[in-house]
Image (tube, rainbow, N blue to C red):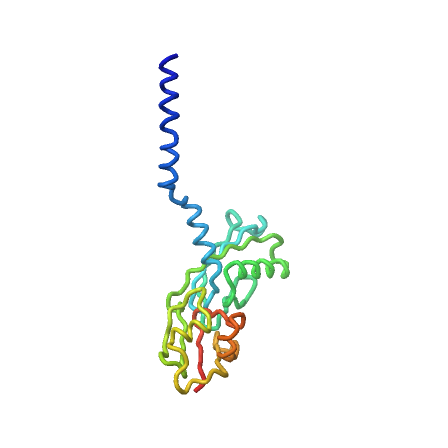
Length: 209
C-alpha cells in the first residue's frame, strides 16, 4: 500500500512536466492532414493548356463495365484547351478548377443519359511551363513573372516597375487563352482594390503606350 502511494505521488509530480513538454514539442501534422491541405491548394488552381490530368470514373453500370466498373484515363490538354472524352466528345475545361471540371463532366454524363450516378475524380499535373504571366508594353521592366494564386493585375504591374514614361493607365488589357479577357484603367485599380483582378498562369498583360 505504501509503495502504491509513493508511485501515485511521483506520477502526480511528473504529470505537469509531461504536459509542458507536450505543449513545447507538439506532434507534427499527420500525413493525411498535410495531404488534405496540398489537395485543397491544387484544387484552387485553374486547369491550363499544356496540363496533363488523370481522370477516374466510378459508378459505371455492371452491364457495360469492364472489371470493377472503374475507368482510368489520362489526357494532355492542347493549346485550344479542348479534350476528347470517350462517350462525351470534345469538352473545353481550361479555366476550371479540378472540382469544377469534375462537376461539369459528371453532369454531362447524366444529361446525355450515359451514366446515371457517375463519380468523376480528376488529378491535375500542372505544366510548369505555364506557371508564369507576361507583362508587355509601357512598363519599366517588361517580361515574364512567376505566377502565384494571389497574383493580381495591380501587383503584376507593380512588380514590373510600374508604368513607364510612355505607359498609358487606360486600356490595360489581359489576354487569356488567346482572347481579350478584359480591359482596365490602372488608376481605377490602384484607387479601388475591389476592381483589381486576379491573374491566371499563362495570362498576358499589355500596357498601352
